[in-house]
Image (cartoon, rainbow, N blue to C red; front, side, top):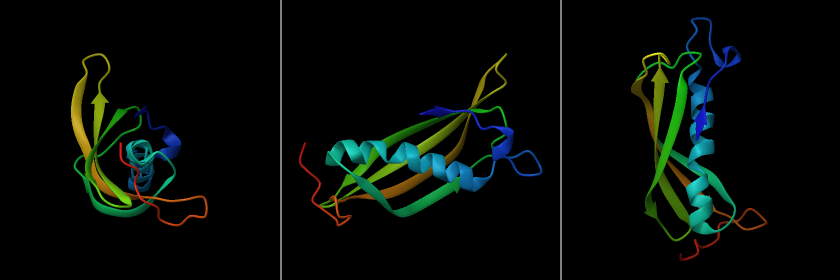
Length: 117
């Protein structure tokens, strides 16, 4: 997933709010568990969240997710966020990494088994 934060996503210092980054990580992180479980998932835990560098308005953020663990009803993913800065002479900086667990749920919102692939 790629996204560029806008001025509305920044605090008074021009840095992007951590909560905005967390929401984007959650959006990027839920795709693989949905595919693995072949259905609806919900975030059950944010196991780890590390802000390594500040994010600024205009940084192009790339989110990369990989499955770390598949349980009976859950899928844990690791997400890295990289910022591309200075478009004229791009540099890449790892700005965030996180680990989150998603639970497969049925139409009533109850946990269900993760289907085998």
